[in-house]
Image (cartoon, rainbow, N blue to C red; front, side, top):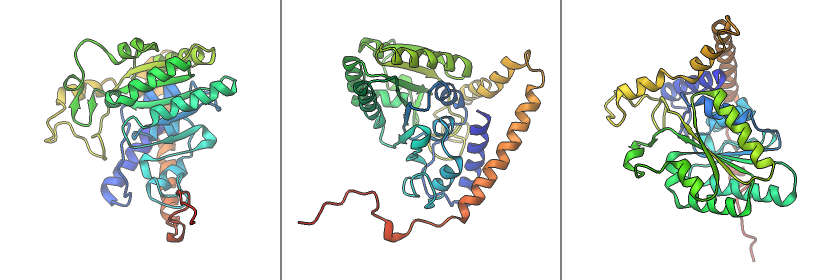
Amino acid sequence: MVRIRVVEETLADHYRDEQEMRTPTHFSIGQEATAVGVCTATRPGDWVYTAHRSHAPYLAKGGDLTAMVAELYGRQSGCAHGRGGSIHLVDRTAGFAGSAAILGEMIPVAVGTAWAFARRGGTRVAVTFFGDGATEEGVFAESLNLAAVRRAPVVFVCENNLYSISSPLAARQPAGPTIRDRAEAAGVTAVQVDGNDVFAVHDAALTALRHCRDGGGPYLLELATYRWREHVGPGHDHGHGQGYRPVEETEAWIARCPIARAADALRDRDPGIDRTVADWREQCREEIRDAVAHARQQPFPDVEALLDGAYQPVPR
């Protein structure tokens, strides 16, 4: 969580001040416990898919930081060879199968992957991260239904941060039924978890993954969390003229910082935890500084290779 926080804070500063990363960026600052709690419960053979807020799950699953930073700078050495940017990260060696920008796009892809895992036998599981806004897409209901019918080993991870861009949950979904309720109505086992408690998220993810590996079918985790930055971009959007998020609400969630809460939980066992966290921060600052410097030295993709990887029909 410390590594993700430092990496994203540093990248946000570079993005704002230098205008060299020509890609939309969606930061997970404040939401680190969801990615870390879930991804550290997976096995190397499990595949993770995400939506646009992709940096945290990518790093938590073991993705290559240097390749990620180079991708944000559009360089050939990036994890998508400079063609995808922040929203289209991939590291197959780490089990991070990909991310995409279209709302809800990777939910059915993960279900298809899980179904393939089941047909081949074994205990591999597919995991897909998405926000509360994606649950309003038709593909969410369709994916729940197919996963339940086929008993696909897929874990749906809803990072419920209460907003879809600037629209609060109450303006988009009826009062009463929760996202968990909707999953259960489709025949999917589901739980709600405090998404800023990394230990609770990790325990819930272990249960979900075990359920899938044992043939129990799909599982949904609804994780309550909150982003500290604007929907897309490096800035803060509370108390700065945006008007859609009350300052009091944001401050209350910042007080529930997942890193601070984890440190508090460990303090009795490890009185030196604050010093340890400070040391980690400095190590991570050095790591991300090196990654940024490396990315800037790399070449951009050659225009001759512009169509590499793209579908090209064979001329008749």
